[in-house]
Image (cartoon, rainbow, N blue to C red; front, side, top):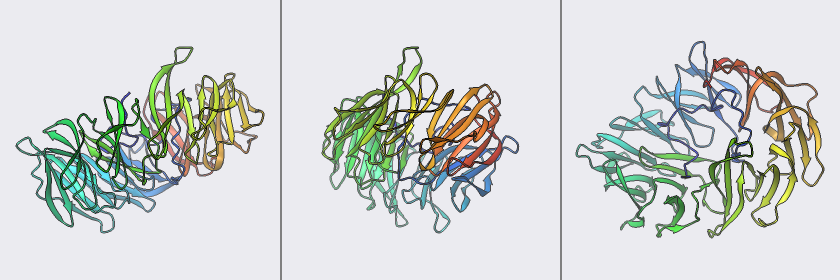
Length: 491
């Protein structure tokens, strides 16, 4: 399966921040580690007034976005760009700002959250949050804008366009001036100097696959690169696929194969989606995209012919040595140290270390799904008989709750579990240090989701209408009503 970046451009399909579908409880799914992220911005559309209300963690912002939001982008969870039918908006803990009225095609956000670069049909603009000013980039001569990128420290902005002659041109905007950078080039990354980075050779809307490193004399890295890139913050390291096998380059070196799989890195607490229609890029906020865990995803079937999402995980060392940690896991958690994982394989849960991958430790057997703390020491598992069990690494399981349906790790190592799930939802319990709450937190709960800085659950609603009340909590134990009658995606 081809790689695809975790973040998306704001021009892509709509993102429901807290749910992909109503009452969708994904029992076997990957866990995004990002242990250093602290906050989340989420948005909810009211089914009553049809406006969109935005939350910073569990706190609703004072203002709202009129109408719906159809696209969303964040780098580190503390700031978000949102596009709706009434314009482009920026949200943070201090509130919501309307950046530009209707007509925005796509936008990208700088790693420092200060700038947004966005396009409106044939024009490109830079928004500076410190000054509040929007500046049009002059001299583009665009019939279509195809790619937008911001340099790592927000010193330069690059825009690729198709001009009136059907030619692909890339321009750099720096210090208030616009200059032509390259012809027949679709930009993938630009350095702070405005004179370095990466591009793919392009003729009109066709990319040739030739990937170049920009220098005084451009260096050809690869002939058949697929235009989906992950790049370190200093732009020295880049990964990409050639014929669905991941390759890498350092400082413009010729492409070298990393492994015989199409993989994505879990490096870094944040990343910025750049690029556009033909070229997608994740600039990772890390010094190196190696010495970390990579994964690939694909579909598989269990013994009952249910379709599952499965994953293979690899550790890639700083010198690009690859070690496979696990194959065919249907759920995994990456430890806080980034070097160990917990994974579910064939109904058993294991821990695996990158330092000793051939000697996994079995933690739980007869398991349907699980979650665990970031240190991989405390595990909560639902077995194949729907019993919730608690296990400390190296100790025997303790039974906590019957008829368990779903389990997830919330804030401060607090586990949340739904049991007795019926057509009208189930009962939500929390578990802390292996001790289950005596009474449910709530009843009629359809789903729960944990994010950085906030946990939410959906209750008192209907799958047929897609309308639910949403409750939020910072500690995963005390919840308050966030918004009534929220319109989510219908099944």
